[in-house]
Length: 360
Ligand SMILES: Cc1ncc(COP(=O)(O)O)c(C=O)c1O
Image 1 (cartoon, rainbow, N blue to C red):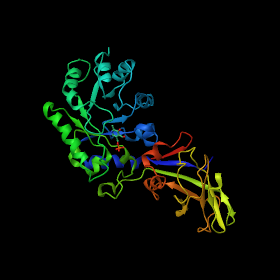
Image 2 (spheres, helix red, strand yellow):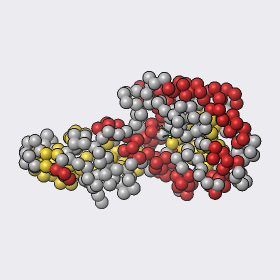
Image 3 (tube, rainbow, N blue to C red):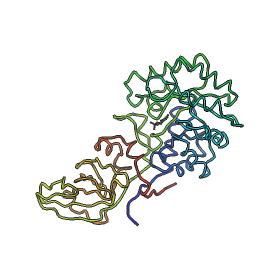
Image 4 (tube, protein in one colour):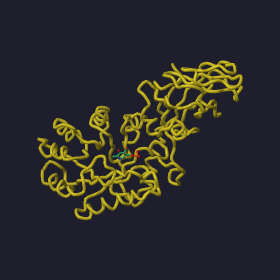
């Protein structure tokens, strides 16, 4: 078996969920497990969390179906809502909660022939300018939905914060006050906070929060934040050195021979590549741990392999363990050296990468 895997510590995810609950004791937290639970495995993560959470959230219908088909029974909120009438009956029957993001989705709900009422969350546009209904039409939308007889009475008003990961950004307070202005009229329950807001903006905590990223043990902030310190990284992406070779000064390594040895060097080949989701744009110099010691990536990432410069680690040999990210090397650090965010790295882990689940 190829010595490459993502080890997922399910108990870390459970602990991180409890941290979210402790930070927002007056709220219920919907665990966001879209994009295959940010690469960790949606079904396994849902099984681990199902006794703790009131509900899960995913991006789209098929992700919710995957959970039900695997035997997950908790409600599943579908964040992008539905795209056709046929989905409504199934949503009602399978206890999916639907986010309604626009006029078309209101029409689909109102004209549906569902026998059971739907649980609906209504997305309000407060400044991010992506999904959600504009402020002026919210009252009317609530009225249409509530009087349709197609939904349960407990409509939730929801918005998405654009800048919650920047604790100094005034936009969060602006978005919050916009939402609270509508809500003051109708007294409906609210949902505002994602991970960053749960940790940095207590005023956004409402009846429902929606933590995602923090469940996997990573901080969404660019600089250290006190409330992120206790998070437990849930994944270690690991492999092994499968070859070691000497490279003379002036010789190149890998496709394009992009990395050129500046001195007589030893290079290790690691059995992981962009075919597994390791970022192809990670540059030479990006950090990798070999037997716990930091070494720099050397040359282009290829589909199944990366190379590392072992010259300053003379004892390194074939079979040595390699951590690409995890408990000892933050995925945030790897992402920033690759010019991206760790959300992308985690969600981009591919199906062929073996996941190994640990539950203490
Ligand atoms: C509507 C919605 N709510 C909550 C989340 C969770 O955000 P985070 O992973 O930053 O906690 C997301 C993630 O993109 C989202 O789209």
